[in-house]
Length: 411
Image (cartoon, rainbow, N blue to C red; front, side):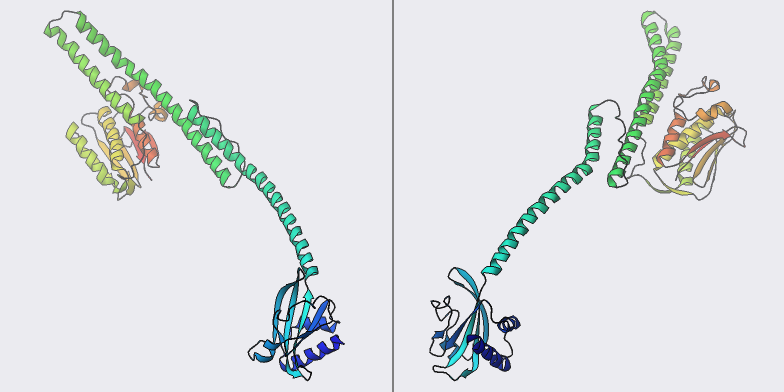
């Protein structure tokens, strides 16, 4: 029968070529199953007992004459063709040597209907499509839930920032208990709000203190000017009043200048900062104070160096030396000590009362004993701002010279 013939053909072909596909051999060994067989002869005709293949052209995919005369033809080929609206997998194999038949048998073809496989693949395709849609919907839902959870603290932060831009008061803190980047952002925002709140409180306190301090010289100046305008005074009588008005104006000018300096945000300038030897900065200020006051300023210094804004350091040292020369005796000593990035100014004046030590760096603070002298209580507050801007600290106390010891440090 046809199965026996094809088995013989495959046996011969395997012995000669050794390249008959294994799955074809397995199928034939099982009785060919749904596989249809067609024999090809040298004259281009074919022989088959399959109703499916009777009307199929012999040249699908290759005819017998081509197998007989084309020496370069592959002994075995696999193709897919459409037969009766169905896809078939076609194996075409030559027979070498040809069987002794009339006409010569030069090859054979095996046709296998792929309808079952295609139906299975189509079913699998639809199942995969449905599964993909379900998985996509589930993934979208999970992503939406996770996204909302991640975005919720960001929405809270955004609302807080919007409130900050539209309200006069600092908004409350954001309560986000997380350890990731969003939690760190919330903590940074809360720190910013705390700093802003402190800044606003300091601003309000500065305005209140400044208005109080400005009121006194402004009132005095106004009274003197009104008196001069209303009274007919001789030049000798008006001269003391004019001198007092000039003194009030100078005090007011100095107070306004100090308030402006104090109200300015004290920050180390990136353009001006650099590594400096503190001794050089202090000596420059000391020479200026000596020229202005005629006093001798002693400087004891090690080789301390620090990254500073020299203009700010000079301002702080100038304020300390001004206080030392103002409150100390005219022939007294003023000593500046520099060690381990600490700058201290010593004098042999009356010193600072123990109850005032904790307040000397407060803005506009003046001890009862110092209120009779010129000043406005801002100089040491500026020193504290300079120290804070450089990551340092301030202190005050009793000097071993007998007077005050006031200083600051930088990092």
